[in-house]
Length: 454
Image (cartoon, rainbow, N blue to C red; front, side):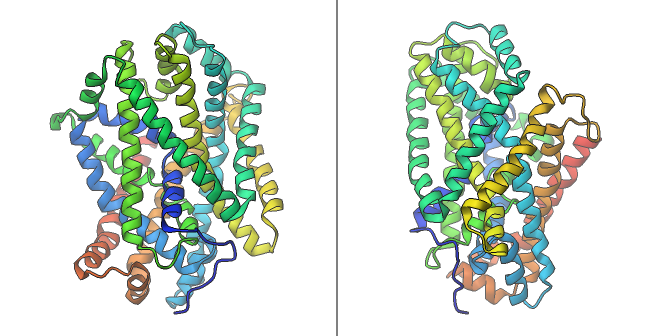
């Protein structure tokens, strides 16, 4: 088959795609969530189970998303339709692309609110507002931020503008240029913070918390947590990787590229843990603070450490970069589809979508102040958006992608795109995408719903 041409452009090289996809995968969850859940659920034993799930679930589905995107060379919605037609199946498979694009749009609406908190903390840390502050004062400062709709609106707006400006530039002048700057900056900041933690006096304790190998702490719930995080950490089920895959050079190996992305995503999460927890332990703070770790615990820690203002500022810049690179990928599927559907330029499309997601973000941020009484199925707007996307849209998107590539596409298509020379490797991917990955994602879907609604 003659390779389709993408009207949006293509990545300059395989490594640009790796950096862009890693930027999509590395987000807020890598910085605080993964290190915390690993330390609380058996340390090294949890990490080992998590890596097995990455290989058995995350990597095969990511390969499937890239495969469909590169084959279709369009937005996820149109790529699913075109590749389904090529396989002599219904164009209604484009609904899978719709699920992903809508999920990305909805996630961005509340993700930008949280990213706004991060930007507010970049400014606060830079101004020295957390110097010598106590836990109670830090908690009150965070509560004041959430209760201030004007401040939340300002930072939410700033973040939406930052994302849309990058998207306006297109694949090469926007996404690629931003990736080449932001991802190296993210890695440098992470290494600087790691070096700082190594001098904190509790580096060994932090590493022990993260990597201690205790299978007795690895409960069935912990296994499900590892399974769920292995799926969500790679930005699967929301069309982002499929959209980025459509810009991938034909000559690049999908398997090797995806393994590299998964490895980098995991390394960032582990290094973040090694950077964060020594600081936490050095200040006798709670490593199990969950989301509060970022906005209450760590500011207190940085506020009492030599050079803490500088490195606290760098930490929140790091988190902001991670949020920025992830958010760009959330909106790209919708932007690409509107450009293809209506023949518009990216600028007007980004302004329209930016305004829509900005308005929905205002509804989400109102959950913490003037709209706190509004309830949807017993949840505020922010929690409802989080619940619907994380527990319904993303698992269904990943499940349907696995079924589509494993059972609907002809092997000639998957073999051609994957170009796996060793038959045993192709067989391993085929078995996992047909059986293991769908069962695992269905388990995530069912158990999450039971846990949330039970």
